[in-house]
Amino acid sequence: MATITTATATGSAWKQVTCEGCGHKFEYLIKRSASESRDSRGLLSSDRNDVADVAKYGLQYKLKHETDLIPCPACGVYQAEMISTPEIRPMWLVILLVVVVVVLLAVLDVLLKNVSIPVGPVLIAALVVGGIAYIPLRKLSAVLTDTIYQYEYSRRNANVERNKKVAADLEKKGRMRSQPVPGC
Ligand SMILES: [Zn+2]
Image (cartoon, rainbow, N blue to C red; front, top):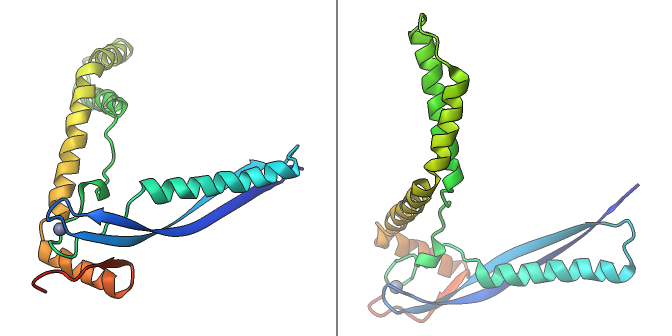
């Protein structure tokens, strides 16, 4: 019976930020963990070290590239790189289009009892239209992704006074540190 060898690496790092809103410098503590699992069948003991190394590498990658939502203590702005929103994929829009067509067909089928709708051909037509619409939908998905991001960015930064309080709180908890803010 196969067993699974798992290694988990946990760590933290201070991340330096120069605020894009006001230029104030601060740093915050980011904590992450990363796991790596392998089927142990045929694993040599050196491979076991390898599993631990991969977990450590994963941890280093996360600490370096990931961010937390920490507002600037001086101006209350969340940095653009801290805001993450889902990417709207073109395929989702194609699927949505096909689902809408299918639902419309079902509704029409109920409403117009005497008219028989050639469901099969219409469905194929919907798939063809979805395929043709893929390129404009790709553009639309980029626009939607950007719009959602812009919305989330302005929502996060709508109340900078509240954000400053969040920052002060994080500083008290030792999760963030910065030079004294002028005027405070
Ligand atoms: Zn700032």
